[in-house]
Length: 527
Image (cartoon, rainbow, N blue to C red; front, side, top):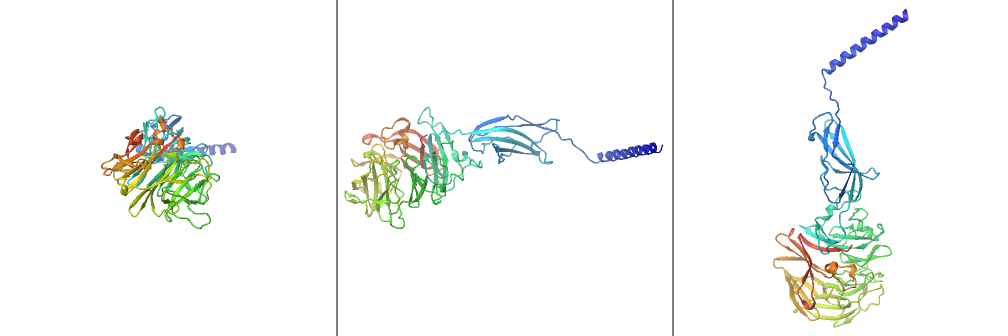
């Protein structure tokens, strides 16, 4: 009986306790409001997407609570986060409800998480999907480097491979569409634009030979790997990786030969690229056995070839020198003829260039005491790295009174088919026949300023003179860029001309590019 009594007592005690607890809970319910957590359905997102580089995505999720709770967009934050492969590296690509921006991602495959977060509670919902970014750029076309109010902008005129010399697709500010393969950040150019060059190259860090576009400004040298779909690696693609000592960190101009051959120029110093080491060495503007270097002009004559023979000018000692691929320094050209001593010119160099015409010829414009002179040097196209290439003075003449406007001329170029000399004085483009000694105005640009005069250095036509079709402009074109001085940022144009025999009229070889800034340089992608 005692045990039964104890059991009843325990039961009564438990019932009283439960009654008290229930009563307490009912009192709390009168003081607080509890909301059950609703489930957010994230719809209108596919399992996978594919977008080309630079194209804006268009993913507009449908967000709806399953139990009918109203959804106010302003009460939530949003995050689109991409992960590469199996790595944990996170890249936030957008922070708005809809993914409607150009993807800040390099070429590759990604896992993307779309996360919706309630600001008041911190509760999150997410949706996972796959994303692939692929390269839409075609490798053939013209790169154009612009000066926009002192800043650099790179444009790209992509060529139609079904109809050569037509450019239906234009990429303005191309570098903004190029993403770092590591961070996904857009490529940005700093400094004033100087030059661009496109050719096959490699270095000690990036051992494979790829077609590269080099962009030089007064602050940096960057390059884009055109071969791999216009990719860019900020760390690995540093120009210092292409030098023996890490210097120079950037250059003003690069003068390429064929695969993995080049000269680089900066601050009156010339650096030769060594094929064996895939690196630029110490400056070659020095004499073996003599300490120190001497300053050289930025203008020099170099055929586009593997041997990398070049003639350049010592501005301090006023003499011509030569270098070639196996050089460790320079050799003074102890050559005289036609009243000119190449080892002791005694005049300043205004400009120098090279033409494949006349079996290969270097042409120099010199100045002394207000008089101007034109020197023509026989420079046969080199086929080896040997030194046995005969260089001679073909002619040397005073052109002060013959070449109209020569005293104010600031741009020169040599035609690669007939060897005409073209130069710019003021707003006029002049053409000079060096054999028949006749000059004419090839084109008058009136109120427009001419910002560029050049010919494109083409690997495929290093020694050939038979060019037509696709390669007519890249191989033989006389390229002239001009702009309206009142509106320099949007009025720039690039025209492509081909010289005719017997000083005939220039003919247009490719459609005119317009809507540009002040064009500083242009280069053709041969891929």
